[in-house]
Image 1: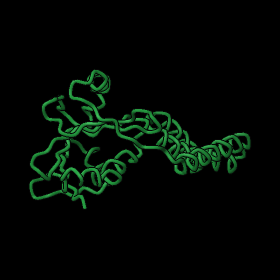
Image 2: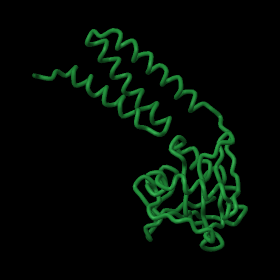
Image 3: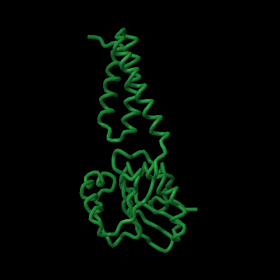
Image 4: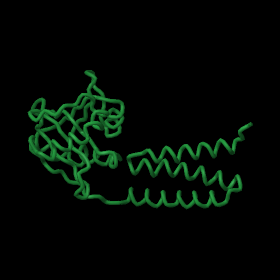
Length: 207
């Protein structure tokens, strides 16, 4: 049986919509679902399946509504300092260990290495943890910068490395360094503004 171009569009739309359902991040889900719904709506109207076209046109309008809401929402970011032996921190790291290993393969918590450690709160919700230590008087090396899946929209990173730069400077920190532990983490670092140095480490100057 010969598959027509319009059928290929229908299959592609179904695949994209199914793919969106696998996303942990709400933002990624909305964007991918938007593409799938747009494609499926187009398929429905062209193929004459009007109910399919109308339903998916409604879905894509819902996706647009929530994306506008997400990007226009003003969230309150805060840091919550934590002691090395904080019980919630230990439980948090244990609970998210499988995900943490994807970005930081081989990561093991060493409380003696935490010069700077805090949770990132978004509207009082714990969305990530930042653990780092000073390698000298002016350099901070990141040990862990983990964000839970639902909040991986780079807002945590921009808050830590851009909004908190004055706090780092007040503590004498002028450079932040990190290892490119995984492809996903390297992508994150580059998007935040890190560049690779001669030693193969990623760094950002704080000015």
